Length: 391
Image (cartoon, rainbow, N blue to C red; front, side, top):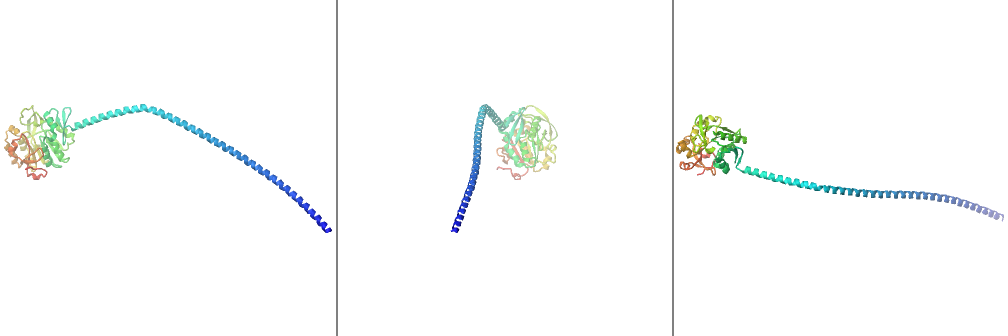
């Protein structure tokens, strides 16, 4: 029984001890819970306060951004208004500028009209065959411009009407005979209508000697040569060509193309000029391929004064004007005139001025003409392959 009592006492003590331990544990746990709760509450308060502060800062930043955006929009609108105002001001200034442009445009149009009129006038002048200068007249030909005396009305009228087409066939024959680098003599060159043809054909390496006794005409010819910068090609010799050296009386016709050492009907005075034969005027180094002779009836003296040239240039061709009226003034019969050339080995051919062809010269045919250029050939025409022979 005592054992049971002792066991009961021990159990009772053990239970009390357990209760006391449980109470102490519960109290400790309660203290810890309160402490944890207070700590959590403090942390929550801190977090809440931090979140509220951040939210307030964010709200303030957003408000500031909205205010800045509003200010920027207002500034932009103000700038646009300013730009619009400036555009309005500039647009208002365009009116006077437009008016000035209209004035300038009208001035330019007027200048253009004047320029076109000037160009048309210049073109018309250049298309004209003759252009009056102070005391001279500039005559247009296919081979360049030539100067003529402003008082030589018959010549000016002829040039205005036909230009170098006065002798187009002869011009063609000259081109068919001469070649690059050749030498040619123009006896009775006048203002140079055929001199320029010769120069164009022989080129810069060739040589042309132009003989013109009339002082005024020779002066004009020299000017024309200088005009075309042909001084190295064309030599103007102010001398009448005859049979011997001396002085002759040059009779002046109504036009400079009719001046002659023989008396001329309806003449207008005379002038003394030097006379010399071709053999004395042409250097021996010059071997001409062509000699043109237009001396108004003095052809026989020219032929007698060129024996040396004919000897050193056996294949030289001659172009000689045949004029029955000139021969009557010189007292030479047409047959004797032709025979003088035949005795020197030449065969006469008539030049067709319409196309430059040649045909055999018959005395009866040429005597019926007022004037004609004859081609005197020392050989058959085939020797000059460019010549066109008409049967």
